[in-house]
Image (cartoon, rainbow, N blue to C red; front, side, top):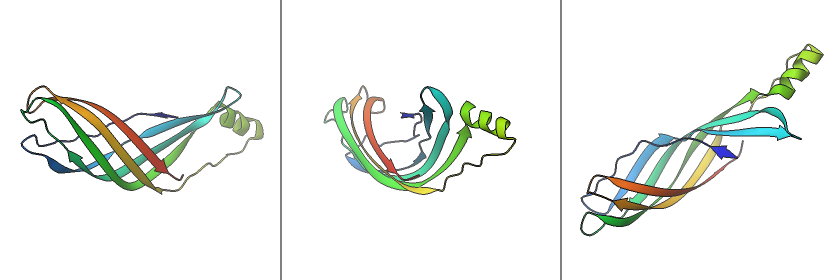
Length: 131
């Protein structure tokens, strides 16, 4: 599974704080069978995240953060070559649909603050949803 996306966010660096993030993290997952392209499942969740951001004592150095949250994921299926070929051969239309579903996210990472306002972040995320 491949995932692509990001979240715009802002964190205060004045003191250790709890953070609230609202964002989307789009995903794409290619579906193949024996190397043939069946299609791509695309999901776009809208999440509400709550987290904690620690801060370095001298405004520079290492810190950590953690987030947890959830939301709803809407999904769409983009037909691949296999499905399109089946439609052309049969002369019909193959309808592949999916429902919106609840999504859960858990994340944590390390930050290195170069200044009180600029940091480099290494982040790990676990996503779970039923589609």
